[in-house]
Structure formats: structure tokens, C-alpha cells
Image 1 (cartoon, helix red, strand yellow):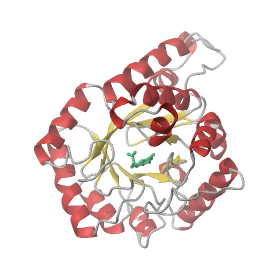
Image 2: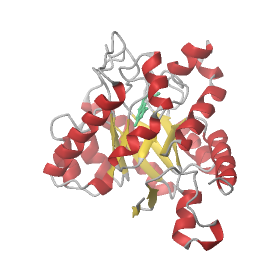
Image 3: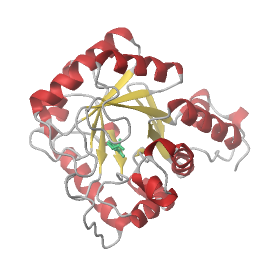
Image 4: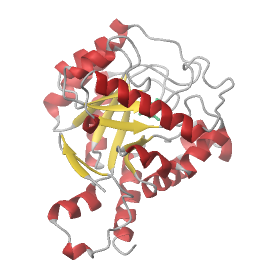
Length: 301
Ligand code: 7PJ
């Protein structure tokens, strides 16, 4: 087990809800804090006009800020701003438009709230601008594979989420195939960690995410969730994003606005298997669920 702190985030590399051998009273303050507070809720703020779940709702600046305020009241730990739609079939957005969508909002949040902000982008230019305006994390569904991204990150001290995706959004759901999905994703992560290391980006800034819905069949998604704890093998904090995704809709036959139970259940499963960050639309409900898990965890071996 190891514990580390980076830019206010505390990560504990073990199953978050399994207490160590000694009782809670005997633990150090840091261990207590780590065990009870270390699951972070990341609130999704899509500022794309064509997002699948909140399509266009927060494209307007004031609405976006109101949503941030609401998420803050509900106990969010970090806001993830996305200006590029990566839903299956989505078309690419150009750099200029993405910067214009994301950066003013980042600036406004940083000046009005005491809030950590992640920027969901795969473009070096957007990363660089975001870092200049105080982003705390870069969340890249392409795991820094685009040109210039590794260099931009190497010159900064932000956290980075490296997500796995097979194919590209426009076609990724057509026929995803793996030899063994868990091993294939672990190999991908190992290669990306190595590429980061070569540029001087140390492991203690990295977070891994297997990328639910990104080039995965329904079965692949549930295998990843069921075996999520296997991704702990790489000794890095894990992020899980299942919120309102079609892996829920397709199993439950529910529209996108009827997927709260599915979103919470999958979030709970991920946390129980060691996820450190849960990326969600429904912040209040997820924070409640995690509080319950935390209360229960005190009594679990
Ligand atoms: C994810 C993401 C995810 C990470 C999106 C959606 C589609 N970033 N960006 N993980 N999904 N790290 O919001 O459902 O699962 S966009």
C-alpha cells in the first residue's frame, strides 16, 4: 500500500473501502483522512453543443457557472470541463473552437470558486492554455498520444488522467476487439506510462482510466467493471466514468435521463474495487452513495 498527496489530492493505492488491520482509532490522522476522504467525485461539465446526456444545456456560460455552483453545494471535489464531444459518432472540433469553449469558463471558475478543475481535452494547444489558466488536471481520452501533448505536460506539474480508447470516437463502437481486454488495457497503460517517463513525467502525476464505452462492447464494459480491481496492478490511482453511459441504457433499456440507479450502482462497484475518482453527472447522489460506503467501510475487514 502507498499513500501520496499531489496538489491537494490524496491517493491511497489499495481498496478504498477495506480498512487496514488496525482499528480506525489507532490510525494516524493521514491514514484516517486517506481512508475516509480519498474517493473524489469529479463532476462533468460538458460545454459541447452535442453532448449525449446534457446536450447543449451548459453551452451557455451562465448556465455552466450555475451548474458549477450547484455541484459545489453538492460536494464535488473536481469539475471536469469538456469542450470536445467524444460520444460515439462525434465529429472533431477544431482547436480554436475548443479553446473558446473551455478557457473562458476555466478562468471564470478559477476566479469565482475555490475549486479544482480538470480539462477534458486531447489537444496540446488546449492543454497548454488550460495549464496557463490554472487547470489542476488534464483528462485525456487519448492518453497524451496526440502530437505535442507529452511535451506540454512535461513542462507543467498538473495531474493527468490517461484513458484507454480503442479506435477513434467516430468509429470506435463499430467492432471493438481484444485478445484479453484487461491485459490489453494494462499493456496500453504500461506503454503510456513509459512514454511519459521518457519525457520526465513522473508516475505520481498519473491517473489511469480504462475508458468505459470507448471502443468496448456491452460485455467488454461489464467485464472491465467486474474486474476493475485488476487495474490496480499498475499501482496508480484509478478513475471510473460510467455515468449515464449506454452500457447502462443498453442493459436496462433506459433513456439517458433514467440511468441514475445504473450510474450509482456502477460507481459503487468501481469504488469498492479501488477507484479513486468517480466521474459523474449526478454529484449529490454520488456523494451520498460514497458517504454510505465510507460509513460501512469502518466495520469491514
Ligand atoms: C470519459 C471521459 C471517461 C474520462 C468522457 C461521457 C463521454 N474522460 N470523457 N473517462 N467519458 N477520463 O461523458 O460519457 O469515461 S466523454
